[in-house]
Image (cartoon, rainbow, N blue to C red):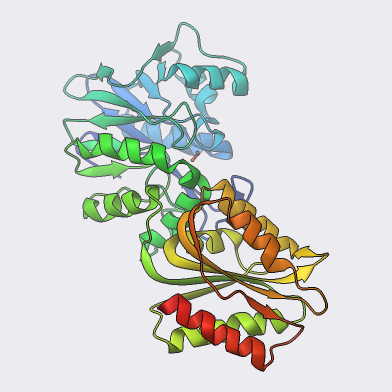
Length: 385
Ligand code: FEO
């Protein structure tokens, strides 16, 4: 697949993976993107994950039609992109790796070699001429590892963005909505590093760009303002959509009933969107994504061992780990004899940045009754008000 006259896609689709990065469900598989820029010199942009080396090298050979690559640009050393570097270097003994100094340290740590004598260390602003094309390197630390560089080809106005602008899903599965799986990917994988993402977005904003080529997901070749705008919102932890995310844990269904009643009341009160997640059964990464997407979050948990329910602990830890901030948060607890979940949830959430607690906190004593139903109505009014 040609991206431009001189840039060819040589990546692979993975439908065998069960959990991406050991934790993310990927029902539509995953793509490991790689590209080759064919000029007087030939540069390959990144390798691919694990067992796809033969397919990738086959794609490369088909694109090159007998030529040998001069450079392998390693933008990111995480093994979903670097696992076949060694095979590439064995196949093309004249080739040189182009990467940041940190990337070579990481290659040595992971694979036992830093390819001394076959390495070209680059940093922010360095250029590599391929002939007509000149590659300019952009440091992108923590997007999503510290060694990451992005690469700009000014001739074709293409920016290679490493993990940024990536998404879950193989490229041979059609999906209408890029944002859904790109958002889940962003907040799960890159979300903690909003400050660093903003810094690199500012550098990209200064470039003339007609295509974004990430390491996962489709190449973005039109409506770039839409994608850049979403990334700007996400990186700044701003509210993307008006609405309320509800995350609940329920043991016998009474707490679930409270969650569903609140959702129904919110919808009836005109809330534009209510996204409900059962933390024990639904995809946790989807619940995290919804928490970051909407302006308000309601945490609903049964009391368990004088604490919150275990899945809620995991969820709140995910939020804290990903720098959750700038949101309104409300609490609903259940407890048959000593309700305490709201107190412990609140104590954790209050440590996060710029959180507005929305009152009242709702207490259910075993099952919904007139008093707790009335509190849910009051909370609904506070959330939509
Ligand atoms: Fe796609 Fe951070 O690796």
